[in-house]
Image: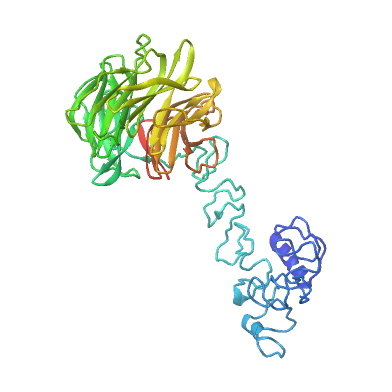
Length: 554
């Protein structure tokens, strides 16, 4: 009732063209005291200028706010704005124009008549284009709804709109969620990013051990996702399964048993792909093994022994696709229990049913204390990267290899501090290295390299996240528009309740708006798995408790 009384008083003020200065109106202050607040007054510093004022043609001033210095030229509603002392709508009074007869009388002098869409011609605050105060029971803008975008974020508020807080411009569906700040920015009902937005992708029989890995495969000319994981349905991580998915995460066919005939626990399950063929690798107490799969996840050939006991953290890649001999596989791994000189190793194998394995190469020759090692394919072969120390000088190193796993030239340092996790990606433009930088309280970072693993002159370290106590398990995927980096982040572990986050950044070649990463998924237990891109479509697999879920970025 209070609001209705105020509105009625305003109507009288405006119709009479008088009234004192009004401050604090929801429609803006009336700074010149002409009875029209600034939302409606086209010059709120001049008391002779307001909607429906007497227009003085040709004086260079638009007194009636019609958009023209001509009398009767029509305002925003398209009608003449001259005052009607008589009934302009019945056509019986002499001296009225044909325009006035067509549009009828503008009773509230707000520039609109019923013919031009005014749904209440006795209230100057109600007309097309007016500010529609949300959830007040009044349709001020005459669109048939009592809703409006009050905070200007592009989404209407309640009761008809989807904005869950129309007083905050940073809050709307699809907004970036700032976790655990007490605000549900993306209107999903939670202060945790992605809480209800990740699709479950595996059957109810699956008992996921570690977070699954994923690669893009070509099935009958169409790209699909192939997910692999260590499964604990029989014993802890005893078996390995695969599941083919559409790009948006829907299962195609049944899950496929990849390795279920041995009793050893399997860890570090990773996958690489080349067209319609994939290679899955894993480690066990007996060493590292590899199995080739077709595009549907079915094994072909035999499981190959790649390295003996003591080898951990295998990383596969497909490379040499521009070589006349065709592409091949390479696997890099660590040997943390060995003497310096065999702390990390690499081996290649051909893409055949009875694959030929090359001799094992010691990565970095006499590198000691290798904390992480990985490999990525290039048009002619591979580039390996590792974090290690020689004579107490910690650094991240790279080296180029042929498609048959032979080292070229010598290793080179590309960054002068070590990292416990590395990830490599490659595209037509070069190689992308992502890792943790900045010491004990550091941040996610990235470097652009060429296909030889060299850091080109002028290549600057790119910061991908704000500071955090720890980031781990870096992943990189590349599509046609650039690279995407993701990592596990424990910056929220001190919160109550504590949560784990998967963060990411559209890092190089994409318009990510900020150099700092954002939380992609946050929960009480969220672990990053694999990541793969095709075009501008990126799929990220995560593990939440015992469930595998898929995040899709486009």
